[in-house]
Amino acid sequence: MKEQLQLLMRLQDTDTQIDQHKIVLDRVPKELQEMARNLVSLRHEIAETQDTLGITEKDLEKKEAELSTEQEKIKRSERRLLNIKNLKEHEALSREIRLGKKVAGEIEETILELMSRLEQLKKNLDRKQAEYDDCEKNLIDKKTQSEKMLADASEALESLKIEQKQLAEGIDQEHYKRYTMVRKFRGNAIAEMVNGSCDGCHIAITPQLGIRVLRQQEFVFCPNCHRILYVKPENIPLPNEPL
Ligand SMILES: [Zn+2]
Image (cartoon, rainbow, N blue to C red):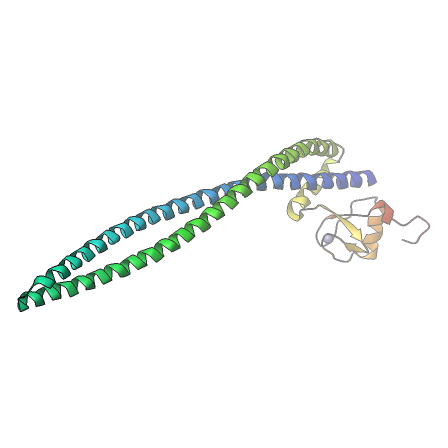
């Protein structure tokens, strides 16, 4: 029975290591995928911002051209105004000039708005580009690290699986079944009895049950979590010590 318990303890240790390696093998590729997805969406955002920037720059050029046309028109009218003697014509042209100046003022305001929008877009673009560069660098670093990590985990998993098989072969079928079932529900099937308590669920073990655990002549299950209770050899009192 002692041997069976020891084999189960070793099996539990092996199974725990297997689980840890499996977690790495499952998690790392997902993390890499997530980082790559993030890069793609950043690239889309950058392209969109660049498009908007291009459109805004064209709008600005158009408005600047409109403004210079309007200003030329005003200058021409002002030169003509100097030579007009007729009062009515003079008034009409003056009105046209005032109107032209109003239009030019409005265009100038639009130009200022476009300029500040452009500035904002350029800032956004720089920020996104910096973020993209960071993410890209992180992804490359992570890929390099992961290659080794994944290779190590795969290698370790292979040898642990062989060990797992060998250990399982030495374990009584009934015990193995029980172990597998409790492990499925509790994570760990075997719990150490520490200071009179189950280390799995921390419930106090009655002295009577405790003695049976120490004797190791049978499997003793925790009445609360149903794990198999185990005591490390160094924690078993010597025969002349009271149990
Ligand atoms: Zn327990």
